[in-house]
Length: 329
Ligand code: TXA
Ligand code: MG
Image (tube, rainbow, N blue to C red):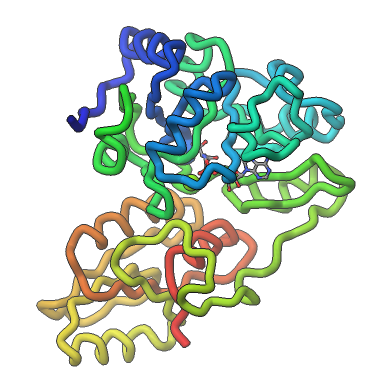
């Protein structure tokens, strides 16, 4: 039976910690998105995460810790860079990939010899981690390939029948998943962009980050692209100058259309639902998943997403949009 979110007061947090100690799954808020947590030292509990999400077992999980001082319990050969980044950005939306300790279950790391660690910046997450005492493996609390949840109600929709408890700590402030930096190799590498920018990381590292390929150069043909955060309605990423014409064509064709608008307004139409997005990158990121989820709930034929600026500040937003949409040819 689907369970309802429970407001994360002190009593609920203690109960949640107890459930986690028993190897059960608890969804909890972080500053980025809601996580689906399990005891990271318990391989069986971790297996429950993969089952609940229908996630392939070779996708590694991030281990959440209450404090940077817990890093040596999970990682080996921790470089100075990791301590410096932790000092500057933790608690916060940054995950670091380090060489794992032998004791870390391979179920957590997808069989790899590295482990991703993060100290989240959310009071409920930190209180839960402290009450629990250990590390919590926690992917985003959505089913595999669906949009990450940024509110407790989204978790209930996605996973309400698969978790022991959903802690409600309100809407997530950052709204997109953490920045991930790989520090396990010879050079620091950006694996996933997030709110913490490349420039902010490089300022602490005092060396350039190796960046993933630019979004624009990825192959974006349907079926070949890395669809990852997709709504169920087909969503198209549309250049600003084509938005009006595309919308008119689809509406004239009798389609029910949703538009995630960045700057433009469109003439009203009975088959058109427009959501105006915030103008700043941080505001847009915070609203993104809830907005896609809302449009998805309206049983539309198509979603058009107006391309926001393609500048460094928008890297994380553009990365997620690239994964949630098809590019208009
Ligand atoms: O903001 C976040 O990081 C959220 C909240 C809940 O903390 N969590 C999250 O988890 O986004 P998930 O499982 O949806 O994404 C984890 C990402 C995956 O892309 C995975 O490939 C990468 O982290 N990852 C985890 N361990 C890794 C490792 N050892 N090496 C490389 N990538 C790793
Ligand atoms: Mg995820």
